[in-house]
Image (cartoon, rainbow, N blue to C red; front, side):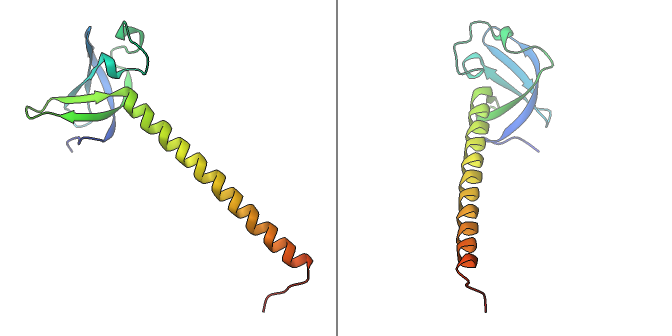
Length: 116
């Protein structure tokens, strides 16, 4: 199944150049992570971040008319962090709502209200 823009996939580093890294994607296609898309900080030497055969999560950021696939490690990490933050917020909100419901039920029991 071909990759699509916006998709996050795991790729394997097949080669490294001074300007980026080429990754083999699950469908057998090859994409490239430009050195500016490796980390949120300045990357002087990509070899400090990646090695051949490393498996990394990447986000497909574009596919041009000739089929060249541009990938981003940092955008995949940002999306993962955003998801984790949203999940943590959802869990906090849910726990607060459950605690409110429990307090409400407990106070009704203490006052002698009964169902039915």
